Image (cartoon, rainbow, N blue to C red):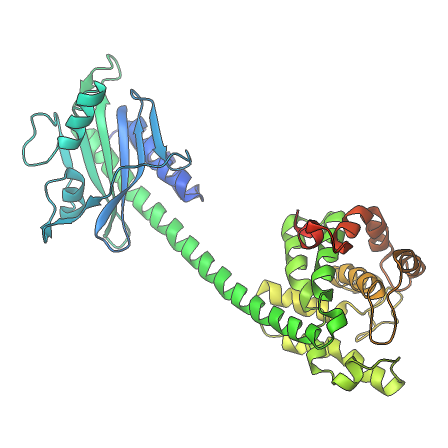
Length: 407
């Protein structure tokens, strides 16, 4: 293997390791293998989870103008290749033979080769006029030396004449090295995605549990049972209007329903009292913020941590007169400032046990009066700049009521 080949192989290895999309990675493996050997066609098979078949993933042929699988959106209709036939290892198909024996097969002319069933390529040639000739088939083994796939190249071409030629020994070594790099890159990507999926599932389980607790708390008061949905949508609109990045908007959308989860610890006699609370009752009611904070503490989940922040800070006031910590101005976490406006607006415009719902105009007036006192002034400004979206969420007749916040 000459210096230029080694340099190219190193470049390919870097590219393979950097690619995060599995479909693009699979295509890149075949593209680079074909580039290194001037092969007209290439196929990539992956061993299925049961290790019973080789599944077609990529199928390419320049002469036939064919690119299937990967990112093309065009599925490969060919059936998988069985690794066993009639209870025995399937050594008839060259791809399954390579997967089972871990041996490289280099066929100068498949029409003259013996020992393998090349009826598929020959049938294809007969129907299309194509001429399958030289073939190189290499196992892809991961870092644990287990075969995870097979790379098959077809019809090497002479760079000078474009004539079909056998794959030379140097090409075999080159592609064997590439196949090894590719297998490790692919395995790492699959492992990463599996870990990411496991993390997503764990986080979703945590979130589902907390959201159900929030719903339990809300359903103790029929008038506020829809509050958490509307309020989370308003919060997302405000976060987006505040030019927060999409990931942070998503966190606020998913975490804000936890803002009042601590109300599950407040007695019904106080939570559902059809009159204003006295001073002692009000002290107990304010404890829902710290109860919520305790309920959501100790989790490694980013969403649960966000929920804790919101639960503890959505009743803080810009002038420092809020609770539970008496934070002022930008001492109040941004997520809490977002949710404070959303929470108050929804509370004002919907019936509560101790009062009737206000009109939007009345609520707008109170928000404006609270600008720089109860609320972050910039957040109030953002609210008034997003009134069309606020109205779309608020309107119970609109299909957008709970998806407007997610657009």
